[in-house]
Length: 468
Ligand code: SF4
Image (tube, rainbow, N blue to C red; front, top):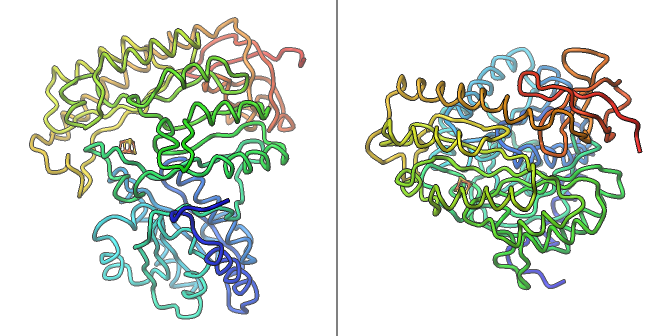
């Protein structure tokens, strides 16, 4: 197939494969690796690619970072605390190296792409052997080879917004897999650093996605999670544009038991997508629809391009088409200038929608974003008080909302033994809610039918039903 310029060339990918082979034969290469991941599912999947490449280089995974010869931190910069944690852990490893001089340390991911971070790394973290941003992920083998040969503290940030196909992947789970369908984001929400560090939106070719999905199906996965910063706008810029709804219909036809996706932007949630979900057999009845705020003025200043009413209209449309759908969201409190009344609009929206779960955050200013320069940054004590009220409200509502499942049948993809008992297992039901039910470790990776008996601490408890 004719490739557009955003795809990494086959020559470049061949160079990376050659670098991996060369590293495998190097006498002084590390024997073992450990990847430390911060942030979202995109980062988790990038870490699976890093692990895949490291194994092609001949390294084996070490269970802890203390035991590894090579430790790589895959960082996130969406919130300030993720960044501080990553840098704190990197610095701690510097101490470990005093007793293990051959330990190699690398840092990659979104944080490295931040403006000014490369200079900071060069100046303050000189002990780091290798640092590179998300734009250079596919070039990791070449950079690693260079680092092994020179040990000069390499920092690479610049790179095109590209799509690299066929990177090796070492999946964390065998029963469930991430499948990236697009990269980057064009939305520039005023609080968000992602478009600056992950680049502009670019969609993978449907044929590449379907090919990967087919390989995953053959390998026996029960569930795929389609990934993108804004999957609803998938397809922009493709030579033969395909909508996300169209892609979902194709994937649904393949017969993989469960298909999920993340993340969606409310402004791009089309009726066609809702119809595709309603008419599907394998797309799970769950939707993560970040609202961020329940107040129109705050939404406008966040550059979200929808109003409270438009958001509620999308929620109603989803619930009409897919009755009982599991809904979750992201909410930011204390966006600059947020008044008490505006915050209360968020509380009232949460009360109105009744989410199955909500990820709540205090606004965290990110240098380079428009909101960071806005007036009216909210004092910490006000933010803490607001988030506690929001969490308390959501937790109370969640208990009630989840009660709709009691007495219902649910299918659970078992992730493993429950943390509380070795005679119980837990996993996610079709609606995206965690379920605990009787079982043993041998259930891991299988889909088990159960009936929900009660709600306990925001999880569902189930009893097993005969398998059909
Ligand atoms: S849609 Fe907004 S919040 Fe989501 S990644 Fe893009 S800019 Fe960030």
